[in-house]
Amino acid sequence: MFNLKKYFPRFIVFILFVQLSSCCITKNDPPDLRQTAQEFPSAAGVNQTFTLRFTVQNISSGDCSAERSKQSVVELKMVNRANGNVQVNNFSNMNELDNDATQQFTFTVTIGTAGTYDLSFIIDPYNTSGETFRENNTFNSVVVIN
Image 1 (tube, helix red, strand yellow):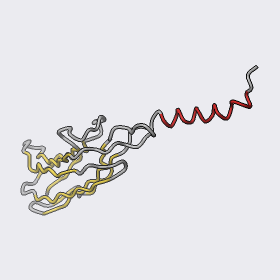
Image 2 (tube, helix red, strand yellow; image 1 turned 180 degrees about the vertical axis):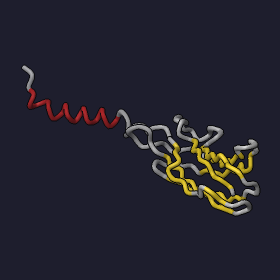
Image 3 (spheres, helix red, strand yellow; image 1 turned 30 degrees about the horizontal axis):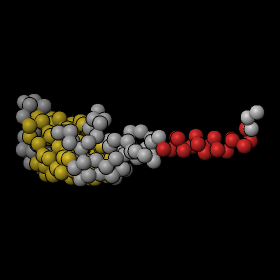
Image 4 (cartoon, one colour; image 1 turned 60 degrees about the horizontal axis):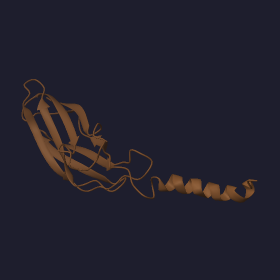
């Protein structure tokens, strides 16, 4: 006859071990780089210098910690909506980021032509960071230059 009292504690320990070892003890989730904060004006004057700030974080997309990302770049692009001319196309180096680590990027720009500009902040545009979930790597907005 099976003695439940004798084996139950061992069974619980075994189940907990399997749950933990199946993920978080033996491996990490792939890195997932996300833009988690942004700060910039919605409008600026012609030939006015203004600053744009973006924060990128390596966040796990699963139950375990995220692996360290590889070094990469971020890109800030601003395109004049009326004529399609690229007015800003700046790159900045992104460090390797551990799980939950962040890095802030600051861009200072001056635009000499009035108009509506489509802004794109792109994390790892060349896919070199080692992350597998890329659908959240682009932030889009608009800045009006008067």
